[in-house]
Amino acid sequence: MARNPRRRVEIELLELGGSYSRDDLAAMWGYVGGKALEKGVFCPAGNDKILLFVTQEKRQDLTQYKDHISEDMLFWEGETKHGSDDRVARAAERGEHIFLFYRRRDRSPFTFLGEIRSVWHQFHSDRPSQFVFRLAAGVSPGLQPDESYRLPESWESTTREVSIQARVGQAQFRQNLLDRWEYRCSVSGIRIPEILRASHIRPWREASDTARLDPANGLLLAPQYDALFDRRLITFSSSGSILVANHLDRRELQRLGVTETDRLQSVPDDTARYLEYHRHHCTWAKDFPSRSNR
Image (cartoon, rainbow, N blue to C red):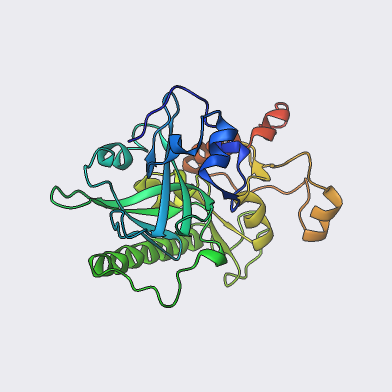
């Protein structure tokens, strides 16, 4: 793992999907040259962050790690000396956040794909350990693997297994929410289950394995509410009233059918704690202290 003098690595300066070279990042964060960030796993001192720099097609003179993105998952091999294996695997437990910089080929800029979360790992002593991460915001179309790209044999069974487990878990989560909310939108009450979306309150990327499948950690939302809630542009008070980010144009929201009189149909006790987490992470919601419990 690469270590450097303490500097604040400000992820918030980056644009999701933006292109950055190591030199760009070094200049932004106060490092002397891109070589400070040349390792594939970079753990800046004094920060709760781990940065992964992943190149799918490596130069022939470098270790040929078998890394690739499939749908919204990154399949990644750890360093040959295993120095970062434990830290990466235990990042969530330690309160650390992992961020991904990904590129197809060497000597091209990296695309910033945001925070990722480990969903599976297998330690090895005689070869690189294997990790699977879920991407926070999916894969941008330009980074979908080439049709000519052949999945390494060592990953084929793991890819299938993890993909199947994820799909099964998500399907069960949705069904549990349909049952919990009686096939109606948690806000509007509209009963068209075909369009309703199973929305995590504490996002998948930030949740434990238990919370990811906990129906209390979900709302069944019509598409317009789901999009706003997922992007933390709306949240809900402890009594269920909607809270709306200040900068949103209320007239445009009305065109979507969203108004400031909207509220959740109910607030189950076991859902309240997840809603508190969501409100806490909507920084703008702190502007509404008098409304938070209305």
